[in-house]
Structure formats: structure tokens, C-alpha cells
Amino acid sequence: MIAFEGGDTVKRRWKPFAVLSTILILVLGAIAQGAQAPTDLSALVKRASQAGVEVEVIFATPEYFTARGDEAGLKRYRPDENLVFFIWMNTHSGDLTLFDMRRISTLRTDQGREIEALRWEAISNNPHHRSGVLIFPQVDSQGKRIVTAQSKYVELVFRGLVGVEWRFRWEPPPLGRG
Image 1 (cartoon, rainbow, N blue to C red):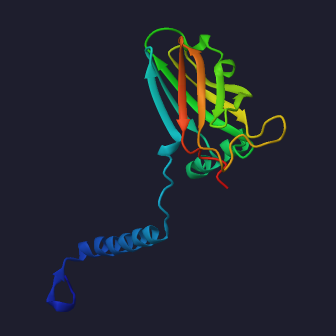
Image 2 (image 1 turned 135 degrees about the vertical axis):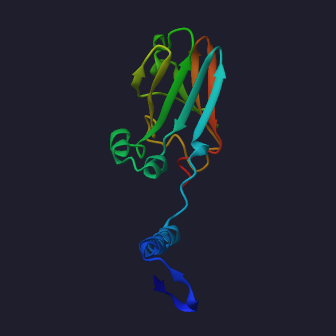
């Protein structure tokens, strides 16, 4: 047995546990003090369900990729030069691959501007569980930014996906605020 101040005694086998516990508490405390609060990405996510289809969209800003530690995504999709949206669609009937996502997608701003998608990159082409990345330009053909500090909202629109119009709105837009 080992004697500690105050007359308490502890069996020798508990000493390593006490030392490790103390070290763990100190390390976790140091990490907690130095760690920043995680970035809240929930404002970037929009969901809708209609006509037997569920759709989830993430407006993938540079902050989104940084918060996720996704350097490869930053390089691949270039959200500093493009407006990037991750899209997941699910249905129990029908074939979601019949829809050309690039052609049915438009980006709309509060100034009435409508921009066509540059491309759709499929992640999964399963007829019932389709996902991919929809990419729009950051600037129009005149070199003007599509989303600016003055933009009140930006809206992603799918026209004709399973026969209906879908709208996903970010108000205010998460980009172009500077």
C-alpha cells in the first residue's frame, strides 16, 4: 500500500489508473480550451419531399469544405470559383436517372437573374437513390458575380423533376457576403 497526504491509502494496483486518469483529464482540458466550436453547417442544408421523392441539397461553400477537412473537394469543385450543390434524391418508385439534372436546374437570385448549371457530376446513378454534384459559375458571361453582398437570396430550382417544380432557397445566401 502507498500512503498519500491526509492518511488515505491506495493499493499499488490503483496508482497507474490514478496517474492515467489525471493525464487524460489534463489532456482533454487542454484540447477543450484550444479547440474552436465546430462550424454550424445546418444553414447550408435544405430538404423537401413531394410526388413520392425526397430531395436533400447542401450549398457547398468554401467554409463547408474547410469545416469538413475536405481539401480534395476544395481542389476538385473549386467553390471559390463555382457555386457547388451536393444533391441526394430518394424514391420508392420511378427512375430518377431519367432526369437530366443539368438541364432542369436553374439558379435564381432576388434580382431576377437565372443562371444555367455548368455541369452535373453523378455520384450515384441508382434509379431510386441518385446523388451528385451540381455546379454553377460564380460569375456571369459579363464577369459579374452572381451572388453578391447585396443578394437577399439565392434559389436552386429544378423544373420538371417527377413532373413538379422544386425550390431550395438560401436567405441570405451563404456566399458573396464580403
